[in-house]
Length: 345
Image (cartoon, rainbow, N blue to C red; front, top):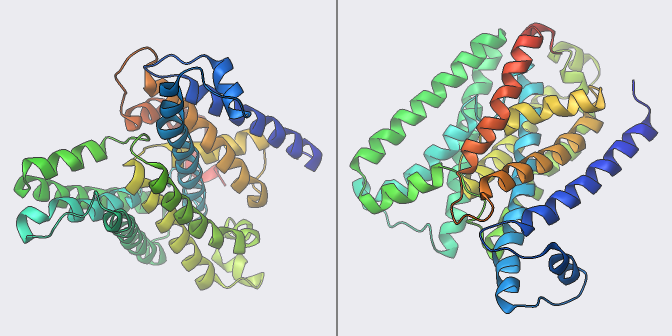
Protein backbone atom coordinates (compact mmCIF):
# COMPACT_ATOMS: atom_id res chain seq x y z
CA UNK A 1 0.00 0.00 0.00
CA UNK A 2 1.35 3.39 -0.99
CA UNK A 3 1.60 5.96 1.80
CA UNK A 4 -0.45 9.15 1.76
CA UNK A 5 2.59 11.40 1.28
CA UNK A 6 3.50 9.35 -1.81
CA UNK A 7 -0.01 9.89 -3.14
CA UNK A 8 0.43 13.63 -2.64
CA UNK A 9 3.75 13.57 -4.50
CA UNK A 10 2.25 11.65 -7.42
CA UNK A 11 -0.65 14.08 -7.59
CA UNK A 12 1.71 17.06 -7.58
CA UNK A 13 3.73 15.54 -10.41
CA UNK A 14 0.52 14.80 -12.28
CA UNK A 15 -0.77 18.36 -11.91
CA UNK A 16 2.58 19.71 -13.11
CA UNK A 17 2.55 17.39 -16.15
CA UNK A 18 -1.05 18.34 -16.87
CA UNK A 19 -0.05 22.00 -16.88
CA UNK A 20 2.79 21.29 -19.30
CA UNK A 21 0.45 19.31 -21.56
CA UNK A 22 -2.03 22.20 -21.47
CA UNK A 23 0.62 24.67 -22.63
CA UNK A 24 1.91 22.21 -25.24
CA UNK A 25 -1.63 21.60 -26.47
CA UNK A 26 -2.39 25.26 -27.07
CA UNK A 27 1.01 25.72 -28.71
CA UNK A 28 0.49 23.33 -31.60
CA UNK A 29 -1.74 23.62 -34.63
CA UNK A 30 -1.80 24.67 -38.25
CA UNK A 31 -0.44 28.11 -37.30
CA UNK A 32 2.95 28.09 -35.59
CA UNK A 33 3.08 30.25 -32.47
CA UNK A 34 6.33 30.28 -30.43
CA UNK A 35 5.94 28.76 -26.99
CA UNK A 36 7.85 31.68 -25.50
CA UNK A 37 5.19 34.09 -26.75
CA UNK A 38 2.43 31.85 -25.39
CA UNK A 39 3.97 31.63 -21.93
CA UNK A 40 4.67 35.38 -21.92
CA UNK A 41 1.07 36.15 -22.87
CA UNK A 42 -0.37 33.75 -20.30
CA UNK A 43 1.70 35.44 -17.58
CA UNK A 44 0.49 38.94 -18.40
CA UNK A 45 2.42 39.87 -21.52
CA UNK A 46 1.16 40.52 -25.04
CA UNK A 47 1.36 38.60 -28.29
CA UNK A 48 3.55 39.96 -31.08
CA UNK A 49 0.66 39.48 -33.51
CA UNK A 50 -3.02 40.18 -32.96
CA UNK A 51 -3.99 37.09 -34.97
CA UNK A 52 -2.08 34.87 -32.51
CA UNK A 53 -4.11 36.29 -29.63
CA UNK A 54 -7.35 35.51 -31.47
CA UNK A 55 -6.26 31.94 -32.23
CA UNK A 56 -5.12 31.24 -28.68
CA UNK A 57 -8.00 32.79 -26.72
CA UNK A 58 -10.89 32.04 -29.06
CA UNK A 59 -9.93 28.57 -30.25
CA UNK A 60 -7.02 26.75 -28.64
CA UNK A 61 -7.61 27.55 -24.95
CA UNK A 62 -11.35 26.66 -25.09
CA UNK A 63 -10.43 23.46 -26.91
CA UNK A 64 -7.82 22.53 -24.31
CA UNK A 65 -10.26 23.20 -21.46
CA UNK A 66 -12.86 21.11 -23.28
CA UNK A 67 -10.37 18.24 -23.42
CA UNK A 68 -9.77 18.55 -19.67
CA UNK A 69 -13.48 18.63 -18.82
CA UNK A 70 -14.35 15.76 -21.16
CA UNK A 71 -11.44 13.67 -19.86
CA UNK A 72 -12.58 14.20 -16.28
CA UNK A 73 -16.24 13.46 -17.09
CA UNK A 74 -15.61 10.25 -19.01
CA UNK A 75 -13.00 8.93 -16.57
CA UNK A 76 -15.16 9.53 -13.50
CA UNK A 77 -18.15 8.03 -15.31
CA UNK A 78 -16.14 4.96 -16.25
CA UNK A 79 -14.93 4.44 -12.69
CA UNK A 80 -18.49 4.69 -11.40
CA UNK A 81 -19.72 2.17 -13.97
CA UNK A 82 -16.93 -0.29 -13.17
CA UNK A 83 -17.80 -0.03 -9.48
CA UNK A 84 -21.53 -0.26 -10.09
CA UNK A 85 -21.32 -3.37 -12.27
CA UNK A 86 -18.14 -4.72 -10.67
CA UNK A 87 -16.87 -5.27 -14.21
CA UNK A 88 -13.44 -4.15 -15.46
CA UNK A 89 -14.75 -3.47 -18.97
CA UNK A 90 -17.72 -1.36 -17.93
CA UNK A 91 -17.86 2.17 -19.25
CA UNK A 92 -20.18 4.76 -20.79
CA UNK A 93 -19.28 3.66 -24.33
CA UNK A 94 -19.32 -0.13 -23.96
CA UNK A 95 -22.50 -0.29 -21.88
CA UNK A 96 -24.48 1.87 -24.28
CA UNK A 97 -24.51 5.09 -22.24
CA UNK A 98 -22.83 7.11 -24.99
CA UNK A 99 -25.04 5.43 -27.58
CA UNK A 100 -28.09 6.53 -25.61
CA UNK A 101 -26.74 10.08 -25.51
CA UNK A 102 -26.16 9.89 -29.25
CA UNK A 103 -29.75 8.77 -29.76
CA UNK A 104 -31.01 11.78 -27.83
CA UNK A 105 -28.96 14.13 -29.99
CA UNK A 106 -30.01 12.28 -33.15
CA UNK A 107 -33.68 12.74 -32.25
CA UNK A 108 -33.04 16.45 -31.69
CA UNK A 109 -30.98 17.02 -34.84
CA UNK A 110 -32.46 14.60 -37.39
CA UNK A 111 -36.09 14.16 -36.34
CA UNK A 112 -37.01 17.41 -38.07
CA UNK A 113 -37.31 15.71 -41.46
CA UNK A 114 -39.84 13.16 -40.20
CA UNK A 115 -41.75 15.14 -37.56
CA UNK A 116 -41.31 18.77 -38.60
CA UNK A 117 -39.36 19.72 -35.46
CA UNK A 118 -37.34 22.92 -35.76
CA UNK A 119 -33.65 22.22 -35.22
CA UNK A 120 -32.34 24.41 -32.40
CA UNK A 121 -28.81 23.07 -32.35
CA UNK A 122 -27.07 26.34 -33.22
CA UNK A 123 -29.03 28.63 -30.89
CA UNK A 124 -28.63 29.34 -27.20
CA UNK A 125 -31.77 27.37 -26.46
CA UNK A 126 -30.45 24.60 -28.69
CA UNK A 127 -27.28 24.33 -26.63
CA UNK A 128 -29.23 23.38 -23.54
CA UNK A 129 -31.52 21.24 -25.67
CA UNK A 130 -28.52 19.18 -26.77
CA UNK A 131 -27.37 18.79 -23.16
CA UNK A 132 -30.81 17.71 -22.00
CA UNK A 133 -31.35 15.39 -24.96
CA UNK A 134 -27.99 13.67 -24.54
CA UNK A 135 -28.40 13.39 -20.78
CA UNK A 136 -31.92 11.99 -21.13
CA UNK A 137 -30.73 9.37 -23.60
CA UNK A 138 -27.79 8.41 -21.40
CA UNK A 139 -29.92 8.16 -18.25
CA UNK A 140 -32.56 6.10 -20.08
CA UNK A 141 -30.02 3.47 -21.16
CA UNK A 142 -28.39 3.50 -17.73
CA UNK A 143 -31.78 2.92 -16.08
CA UNK A 144 -32.40 -0.04 -18.35
CA UNK A 145 -28.96 -1.40 -17.48
CA UNK A 146 -29.71 -0.89 -13.79
CA UNK A 147 -32.94 -2.86 -14.04
CA UNK A 148 -31.03 -5.62 -15.80
CA UNK A 149 -28.33 -5.56 -13.13
CA UNK A 150 -30.91 -6.24 -10.42
CA UNK A 151 -32.01 -9.40 -12.26
CA UNK A 152 -28.72 -10.60 -13.76
CA UNK A 153 -25.62 -10.97 -11.58
CA UNK A 154 -23.23 -12.29 -14.21
CA UNK A 155 -20.95 -9.49 -15.39
CA UNK A 156 -20.43 -10.92 -18.87
CA UNK A 157 -24.19 -11.14 -19.41
CA UNK A 158 -24.55 -7.51 -18.36
CA UNK A 159 -21.81 -6.59 -20.80
CA UNK A 160 -23.63 -8.35 -23.63
CA UNK A 161 -26.91 -6.65 -22.68
CA UNK A 162 -25.16 -3.28 -22.76
CA UNK A 163 -23.82 -4.00 -26.23
CA UNK A 164 -27.35 -4.94 -27.33
CA UNK A 165 -28.70 -1.65 -26.01
CA UNK A 166 -25.97 0.10 -27.98
CA UNK A 167 -26.89 -1.83 -31.12
CA UNK A 168 -30.58 -1.01 -30.67
CA UNK A 169 -29.92 2.72 -30.32
CA UNK A 170 -27.60 2.59 -33.34
CA UNK A 171 -30.40 1.00 -35.35
CA UNK A 172 -32.81 3.78 -34.42
CA UNK A 173 -30.18 6.36 -35.36
CA UNK A 174 -29.75 4.64 -38.75
CA UNK A 175 -33.50 4.85 -39.40
CA UNK A 176 -33.50 8.54 -38.51
CA UNK A 177 -30.51 9.10 -40.79
CA UNK A 178 -32.30 7.38 -43.66
CA UNK A 179 -35.25 9.78 -43.46
CA UNK A 180 -33.30 12.94 -42.60
CA UNK A 181 -32.28 15.73 -44.94
CA UNK A 182 -28.70 15.99 -46.19
CA UNK A 183 -27.99 19.04 -44.05
CA UNK A 184 -29.25 17.44 -40.85
CA UNK A 185 -27.42 14.20 -41.63
CA UNK A 186 -24.17 16.10 -42.17
CA UNK A 187 -24.54 17.92 -38.84
CA UNK A 188 -25.05 14.67 -36.95
CA UNK A 189 -22.30 12.81 -38.84
CA UNK A 190 -19.73 15.49 -38.04
CA UNK A 191 -20.87 15.50 -34.41
CA UNK A 192 -20.60 11.69 -34.17
CA UNK A 193 -16.94 11.73 -35.26
CA UNK A 194 -16.04 13.58 -32.09
CA UNK A 195 -14.45 17.00 -31.81
CA UNK A 196 -13.02 19.09 -29.01
CA UNK A 197 -12.84 22.26 -31.06
CA UNK A 198 -16.55 22.97 -31.46
CA UNK A 199 -17.05 24.60 -28.05
CA UNK A 200 -17.05 28.38 -27.94
CA UNK A 201 -16.27 30.16 -24.65
CA UNK A 202 -20.00 30.55 -23.91
CA UNK A 203 -20.61 26.85 -24.56
CA UNK A 204 -17.62 25.98 -22.40
CA UNK A 205 -19.28 27.68 -19.43
CA UNK A 206 -22.39 25.55 -19.91
CA UNK A 207 -20.22 22.43 -20.14
CA UNK A 208 -18.44 23.38 -16.92
CA UNK A 209 -21.74 23.89 -15.09
CA UNK A 210 -22.95 20.47 -16.25
CA UNK A 211 -19.75 18.86 -14.96
CA UNK A 212 -20.09 20.51 -11.56
CA UNK A 213 -23.65 19.21 -11.24
CA UNK A 214 -22.52 15.72 -12.27
CA UNK A 215 -19.63 15.65 -9.80
CA UNK A 216 -21.75 16.62 -6.77
CA UNK A 217 -23.25 13.11 -6.26
CA UNK A 218 -19.73 11.63 -6.41
CA UNK A 219 -18.51 13.94 -3.66
CA UNK A 220 -21.56 13.21 -1.54
CA UNK A 221 -21.13 9.42 -1.65
CA UNK A 222 -17.40 9.03 -2.26
CA UNK A 223 -16.86 7.01 0.94
CA UNK A 224 -19.61 4.55 -0.01
CA UNK A 225 -18.08 3.41 -3.29
CA UNK A 226 -15.44 1.25 -1.59
CA UNK A 227 -18.11 -0.87 0.07
CA UNK A 228 -19.80 -1.48 -3.29
CA UNK A 229 -16.73 -3.37 -4.50
CA UNK A 230 -17.58 -6.18 -2.06
CA UNK A 231 -21.21 -6.37 -3.10
CA UNK A 232 -24.52 -4.80 -2.13
CA UNK A 233 -25.03 -7.15 0.84
CA UNK A 234 -21.76 -6.05 2.43
CA UNK A 235 -22.52 -2.39 1.70
CA UNK A 236 -25.92 -2.68 3.36
CA UNK A 237 -24.31 -4.31 6.41
CA UNK A 238 -22.11 -1.21 6.67
CA UNK A 239 -25.21 0.98 6.93
CA UNK A 240 -25.10 2.30 3.35
CA UNK A 241 -28.39 3.15 1.65
CA UNK A 242 -27.98 1.18 -1.58
CA UNK A 243 -30.94 2.72 -3.36
CA UNK A 244 -29.70 6.24 -2.67
CA UNK A 245 -26.19 5.34 -3.80
CA UNK A 246 -27.52 3.63 -6.92
CA UNK A 247 -29.52 6.70 -7.92
CA UNK A 248 -26.53 8.92 -7.22
CA UNK A 249 -24.50 6.81 -9.66
CA UNK A 250 -27.25 6.95 -12.27
CA UNK A 251 -27.68 10.72 -12.07
CA UNK A 252 -23.96 11.46 -11.97
CA UNK A 253 -22.99 9.13 -14.81
CA UNK A 254 -25.91 10.25 -16.94
CA UNK A 255 -25.05 13.95 -16.58
CA UNK A 256 -21.29 13.52 -16.97
CA UNK A 257 -21.32 11.10 -19.91
CA UNK A 258 -24.34 12.73 -21.50
CA UNK A 259 -22.96 16.26 -21.44
CA UNK A 260 -19.50 15.12 -22.60
CA UNK A 261 -21.10 13.29 -25.51
CA UNK A 262 -23.32 16.27 -26.30
CA UNK A 263 -20.45 18.76 -26.54
CA UNK A 264 -17.71 16.52 -27.94
CA UNK A 265 -19.51 13.67 -29.65
CA UNK A 266 -18.89 10.01 -28.78
CA UNK A 267 -15.38 9.52 -27.36
CA UNK A 268 -14.42 5.89 -26.93
CA UNK A 269 -12.21 4.04 -24.43
CA UNK A 270 -11.37 6.95 -22.11
CA UNK A 271 -13.98 5.77 -19.61
CA UNK A 272 -12.69 2.19 -19.74
CA UNK A 273 -8.92 2.59 -19.85
CA UNK A 274 -8.26 5.57 -17.55
CA UNK A 275 -9.63 4.03 -14.30
CA UNK A 276 -7.33 1.04 -14.84
CA UNK A 277 -4.40 3.37 -15.43
CA UNK A 278 -5.23 5.08 -12.12
CA UNK A 279 -5.28 1.72 -10.31
CA UNK A 280 -1.94 0.71 -11.83
CA UNK A 281 -0.23 4.01 -10.99
CA UNK A 282 -1.64 4.55 -7.49
CA UNK A 283 -1.95 0.83 -6.59
CA UNK A 284 -5.11 1.25 -4.56
CA UNK A 285 -8.82 0.45 -4.70
CA UNK A 286 -9.73 3.38 -2.43
CA UNK A 287 -12.15 5.58 -4.35
CA UNK A 288 -11.14 8.61 -2.32
CA UNK A 289 -7.87 8.34 -4.24
CA UNK A 290 -9.14 6.78 -7.46
CA UNK A 291 -11.71 9.46 -8.29
CA UNK A 292 -9.28 12.42 -8.29
CA UNK A 293 -6.59 10.21 -9.82
CA UNK A 294 -8.89 9.12 -12.67
CA UNK A 295 -9.97 12.72 -13.23
CA UNK A 296 -6.35 13.93 -13.44
CA UNK A 297 -5.18 11.10 -15.68
CA UNK A 298 -8.28 11.43 -17.88
CA UNK A 299 -7.54 15.11 -18.46
CA UNK A 300 -3.91 14.32 -19.31
CA UNK A 301 -4.77 11.46 -21.67
CA UNK A 302 -7.32 13.48 -23.61
CA UNK A 303 -4.89 16.41 -23.88
CA UNK A 304 -2.35 14.03 -25.39
CA UNK A 305 -4.94 12.57 -27.77
CA UNK A 306 -6.00 16.06 -28.81
CA UNK A 307 -2.38 17.00 -29.48
CA UNK A 308 -2.02 13.92 -31.70
CA UNK A 309 -5.23 14.75 -33.56
CA UNK A 310 -3.95 18.26 -34.33
CA UNK A 311 -1.42 17.00 -36.89
CA UNK A 312 0.99 19.95 -36.35
CA UNK A 313 1.77 22.15 -39.39
CA UNK A 314 -1.29 20.70 -41.13
CA UNK A 315 -4.72 22.28 -41.49
CA UNK A 316 -6.32 18.86 -41.09
CA UNK A 317 -7.60 17.57 -37.73
CA UNK A 318 -8.24 13.91 -37.03
CA UNK A 319 -11.53 12.94 -35.35
CA UNK A 320 -10.81 12.70 -31.63
CA UNK A 321 -12.80 9.46 -31.40
CA UNK A 322 -10.38 7.75 -33.78
CA UNK A 323 -7.33 8.85 -31.78
CA UNK A 324 -8.75 7.77 -28.41
CA UNK A 325 -9.64 4.39 -29.88
CA UNK A 326 -6.07 3.91 -31.10
CA UNK A 327 -4.77 4.76 -27.63
CA UNK A 328 -7.43 3.00 -25.55
CA UNK A 329 -7.94 -0.22 -27.51
CA UNK A 330 -4.40 -1.57 -26.88
CA UNK A 331 -4.85 -0.78 -23.18
CA UNK A 332 -8.08 -2.80 -23.00
CA UNK A 333 -6.55 -5.69 -24.97
CA UNK A 334 -3.60 -5.73 -22.59
CA UNK A 335 -5.96 -5.90 -19.61
CA UNK A 336 -7.82 -8.81 -21.17
CA UNK A 337 -4.60 -10.73 -21.76
CA UNK A 338 -3.10 -9.93 -18.36
CA UNK A 339 -5.84 -10.92 -15.99
CA UNK A 340 -9.12 -12.74 -15.64
CA UNK A 341 -12.21 -10.55 -15.54
CA UNK A 342 -13.36 -12.12 -12.30
CA UNK A 343 -10.12 -11.22 -10.52
CA UNK A 344 -10.18 -7.52 -11.34
CA UNK A 345 -11.79 -6.55 -8.04
